[in-house]
Image: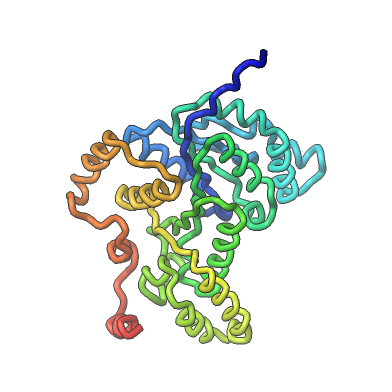
Length: 313
């Protein structure tokens, strides 16, 4: 007589944190782990980056125990990019190792700290297949795509960010939240041409193209930029949530957005802890998703002439 099949594992929720190198993925995982811990949520962080050897957070599962980038580069004579692709393919081929590690934490919220190589999320399939397998293991995940906020100050870079974000959304095939990280440094490399909500809501990009055309170098690429902008606008999928990891109000806004994306619902205890945490700082009536409030904190005031032009737009 055949033994009864084992019951499927209970639902487990989490975030896969992706984005280009230096966008703040590891810092985000550290800050979100501490923030959710204050809410009473049990959290574990899974390091999916075999090249990340200086982890600031307490790591429950570390892929470096299975394979490291240095070993791959030394033994297979690969460069850092090829070596990282091999590591992800090796992890995909050893998913039983990952499953055994994750099954030790059945009643936790998961943060997956992923590598920073962009092609892993735009056209290479290993991480996509790993995320798909996690879904089959009853994980309910949302993809959190971090992008440096200071790219908003450069129209050409911002268009590139939009294309990369859109490509990642379509390739990864998970509920997706795009985040502008390091909001306290948004104007470190230049002033914003428009109000912050223009960038977070990805409004009419033709205004951005007109601003870009004033640069003699990019003027000859106007048609190319126009077609890229049309692709982004035709899909209508890309928008951003601003984030400063050191700001509780900003962290709350991002967490609520991600919880809506992956289906996690706040429990009563978490809601009470959240209200107690935020009441001293912002009071009971504050707007979580107000781009104007974020702009007031992190973006310097414009001259009157520029403000008038923005009102006209």
